[in-house]
Image 1: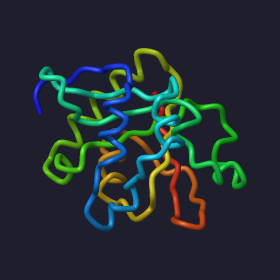
Image 2: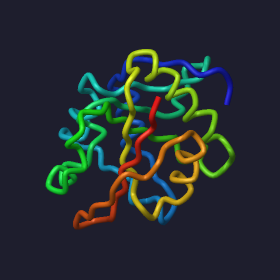
Image 3: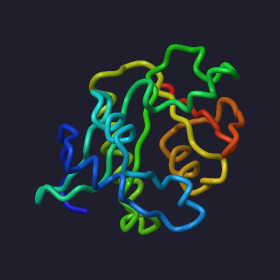
Image 4: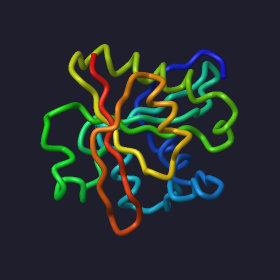
Length: 157
């Protein structure tokens, strides 16, 4: 990965993200290209991460879009922390790119949010959990949806 930049999410980036296909078990994160999913990615909470050639590397979001809605029933989001979500292009995962990508995203987010930061991750995604712990995130709580068990993790500034 070359130098990374943040861009506004646009139709082209959103459509590319929605066409990504991850290998099992990460295929849990695959999406469908639909009007509803495009509308979600094009809300004001998502940003694209690109290299200097404007190739899409990944994305992140801050706010309600980063939450798993059923988590509210379990009190997962009762504390008013900024929530972050992110995704790295499937062809770049599992190749040592996660630290650089996540570090870049944290830098961008911490420019605007000086409080604690929370994220939600599927419990099976041990690779991501190890990465988040490396960056100072600690497990806060666990909750279950019909499709997966999730963990919220918090980073204290």
